[in-house]
Length: 203
Image (cartoon, rainbow, N blue to C red; front, side, top):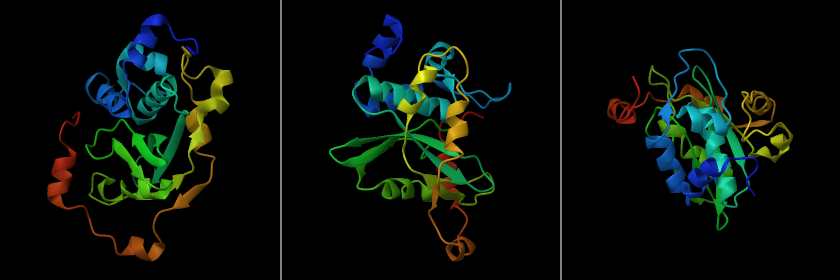
């Protein structure tokens, strides 16, 4: 199943034989795009062409690569307060959830498939999800969304930006990760962990 990819594009995606290899490709072959020239939502084809992506675009590329290797293409949205949302490409292996992500923060990326539920997976990001003030900002998460619903838009190979996908993610139900009482008692991120999160960050 090539889904409209060129032979060269398929060779690149087929070489990413494991989720960990997909993450490595995102980390070291695809630059982080801070959208200084304006907002974008590149398709996987455009990410491969431009060799840069932000978290939404990285998740789309990861979902396409996972699909090439037989996984359903699924995204999960993490919703924050006083911070940017974050999008994961999620997958299951032997009944357990894992994730791939593009981020400027070190600990908001890969997760091994060891989590029994989506909530367990999401909560593994909680302590590391923070804004520039050091506030822990993760508050809600969506259910996994199958990207097959966007196949009619040729989301993997479109030469246009695929805004319909993030727009849809904003409309699906989100579930809380903490209560209001917990939120009031949160501590700021430890300064050492804040420094560690910036390893490899694009300034």
